[in-house]
Amino acid sequence: MIQLLTITDIRNLASLTLKPSPSVNILYGLNGSGKTSVLEAIHILGIARSFRTSRIKPVINRKSEACTVFGRLGLGSGSIPIGVSRNHREESLQIRVSGENLKSTSELAKLLPLQVINPDTLRLLEGSPKLRRNFIDWGVFHVKHQDFFPLWKRMQKALKQRNSLLRHGRINGSELNSWNLEFEKAANAIDKLRSDYIQRLTPVFNQVLSALVDLEDLSIQYYRGWDKDRALNEVLSSGLNRDIQSGYTHAGPQRADLRIRVGKGSAVDILSRGQLKLVVCALKLAQGFLYKELQNKQCIFLVDDLPSELDIPNRKKLCGLFEKMNCQTFITCVEKEALENCWLPETEVKMFHVKHGQVELDENPGQQRIRQAESLEIEHE
Image (tube, rainbow, N blue to C red; front, side, top):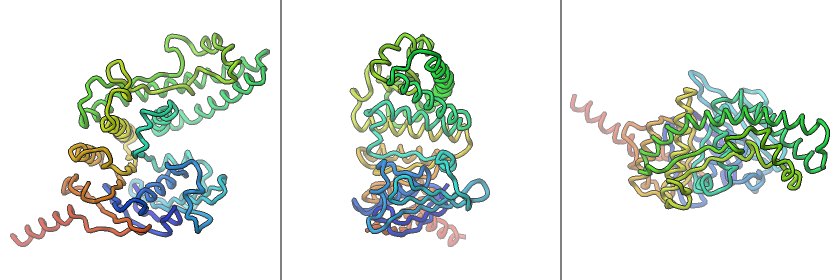
């Protein structure tokens, strides 16, 4: 949970500090005011990069050479300071946690697990399998970090070496066999972790989806990246000529996918955009619920333009699930009225008006009602 957030020179946010609610935070304002940039800053704090671009230069304020995000995270009964600084050089990155330099962004990601829901999130269903692999690996990483991350690095190294041998025609002798064996071991272990995770995620996803939309025929199916009825070494051996011709490895966990179907057809071809958005939201929320169940911790949700393509009843359903998860959520919208009445009176909602790169805290109508009720009770007594 973020207790304090300070942003310096992220796009049009020159300098601002806010104390967010541990529950729901709504950032509203006109397009271009800086709402999404606040979410982007939180993402940089948690992963050291933006969710809007792979390059850091567009993120930094045009009048500055560097950007910095500082946060104070509540962990258990205490808190720790985290700071991330980037400058125009792509390789330049400084991460400080409790006054110590941190070299690994994976260690940073462990401290601040984030889920992003935005208009581009539909690409999770419509885009390449890589996006869905990243979705699976987010869950495996945060649930089985000590097991998964070393295996993932081993697999990537073996895959890189094998592809290099294929491209250079070095397929004779023991070197290719050695990297085949290393690749196969890491691949099978990664597949087991991914398969176990999807098996746990599926019933949670089905429950969340049923709370949002009635799609009884929808299913998620994990594809491991090679024939489920054949061992990977057999597949690699039989496909060697094709791998040599193309210069890369066709089979393996680097080809894994999550297939979302309605009946026997692809969900993307059958569902409306509104339904697809609810399916994506259900996938992301299911990860949050499962993370809480397995780790007894909360992830933080960054939700950009929640009202987009969702009518009022569906907005309320989604907001109700955020309340049920009891996680810290940051949500943007243009008009605050679009989300103002979506919460229970006891939910701690903070509304921030974002205007020209500045953020002002609004008086929360929900909290006003609580205080008015308390005042009436005191007067009555």
